[in-house]
Length: 134
Image (tube, rainbow, N blue to C red; front, side):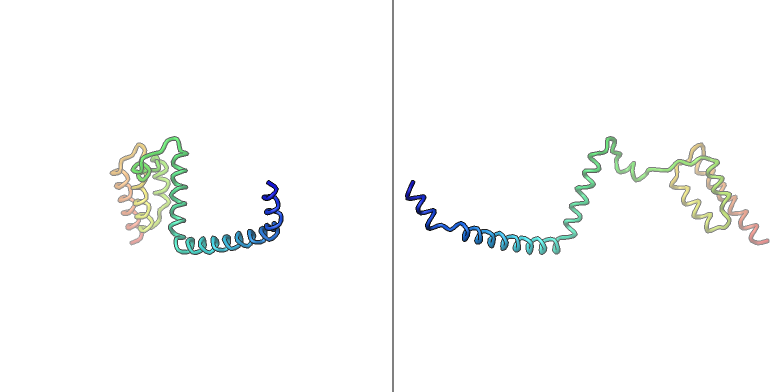
């Protein structure tokens, strides 16, 4: 034990060891930073995609009632007859009428059929054409 204490105290300088250790840590940190920069610049898009997919997975897991993708894609906004006629009466030209009619295709009609919507839009188109010729 005495030999070990003498060996450690006389042959081992703590300050020198700490300086070496700090230099090694600094070089390792510098190399780690260089490697991290290279990997992020090369695969930045992959990293972003991985983050977004994992975030989306977390959002889906947090939801209680997750709808199937088909239902999500075919989700429709309900519209009633008065709302339909209010929008139809605000239309003043054929271009706006076609846009309004195409928008009606995406909506879920309440107490109306799609044939009714088509007939009403055709009637409105005839009125617009007749008033524009006068």
